[in-house]
Length: 175
Figure (tube, rainbow, N blue to C red):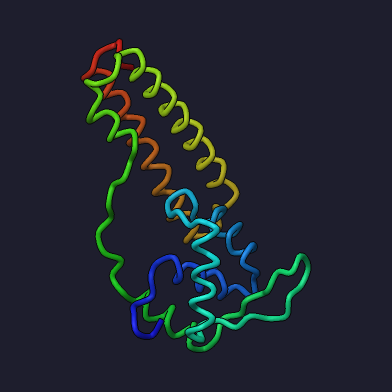
């Protein structure tokens, strides 16, 4: 890893390992729960990164435990690599929203099918907003969790506003 900069997925795993030893499965679950709504990490990525980070000396594997799972612990090199990564500017974001791609080519869909998709996605965003708002009550004392949740809440509200606008722009048959 020293030859190439730490990628965001590996850095995320190192960040979670700051909290203590975790197995690969623990890291998968932690990532899904804590950052899965805004950063996708697959199970295969977790295990691939763990193997690479172990080879690079950023983490150490412990003795296999229950279900043959190995706990991983952060090394000093891993702490340094994470520290260097977290100090870097995160760079620009890239909007990758599949519904926008569908809408961009919406002329190729029957209007009622597009309307079904828009309604389905709107409902999903309404549910997500409600979940974020519930989470905000639970995590209200954790300022970092709240900063992330605030983004999620504002994002979901903006997407719901967009659904209103797109419905007005495309007409009732496409809402």
